[in-house]
Length: 440
Image 1 (cartoon, rainbow, N blue to C red):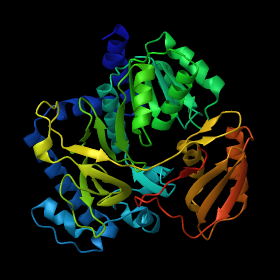
Image 2: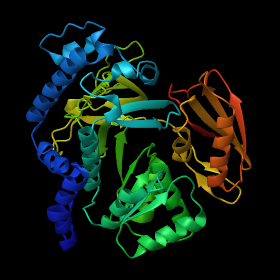
Image 3: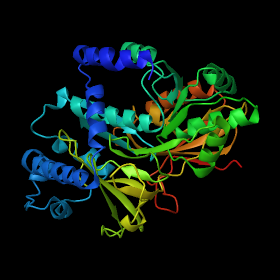
């Protein structure tokens, strides 16, 4: 590792933990040790953590206390006594899902409209946030990153603020807004990365847009590694990114509610972060399917003590890999997904060639709790139709504000129409889809 890497890890990170109370690096060091354990020890950790979260919920969380669940000695059997919840549960019972051990106004509030187009609000402790950041950083390392390596990153917080700007400088990160990708901006950013042997990180759709532009314009930029999150890394995305940027991009699987679920490392399969999540794959009747069969992803978060998410149905489909199919040479003792279906999502285009990905819109709609769900339909290059399901507190000024923000990012190239609806149909697989492009 470089001198700068040693400077960060031995001096600057420990100092920052004292100054800003973010224990990300300490948690990162712990994680590296935890994930080095063998399969049996990792299973014991998961069992202990699952038991602790169930006891905590039944004793301290009003929503679960009211269910009078009788816990025995086996957390895997006890878990089945808990109801499956979803985003509507978070909306309807938000306060009752917060542990009595914490004051709501002292928790970290996270509002997000993820790739389903349905809003959710959760509350985290500072420790949980540090652990989640540490898990994400570990995934980056699995993809070839080390602290201090130059990074080209896409995201939806372009207004970085003081601490984020300092972080970007220290970690040599060029942060690129994913709200819209113009050809000129893509070219400039690829040119920036060209001679730096940089690491490429961001939303799968954003990285794909970069690789497509690079291919079409014969820009030869080699990255040292790459990692994606936020939306589905389709096979044609992966193929073009890998060939164009001479990398093997790693896919990760998390949710807007802070569930750090899985990631690729040495295999094409994703490892499941079993010390932090327990994954059930259920059929439409709520019965667990056999490994190797597809079903609905239901997650229990094992480090969310302030607002436990127990048996949370996140809206995805997945398949667990049967144990008799586990590769004998896998590096980690964690369980594996065979396939994560995720959600389908398209890209919005404009006449000038600018692109808007799913996060261009979720980054806007997450600020309007009056909108329950939305879906964007594009039939031509000059306009989009946005279907919305709204709360009673909704007013049409909200649509005006949203229109202004979309116009700002799309440079006014799109005519924006809204349609208030009572129901937005899912795709054939049963999953919500936030962007539907009918442009071929």
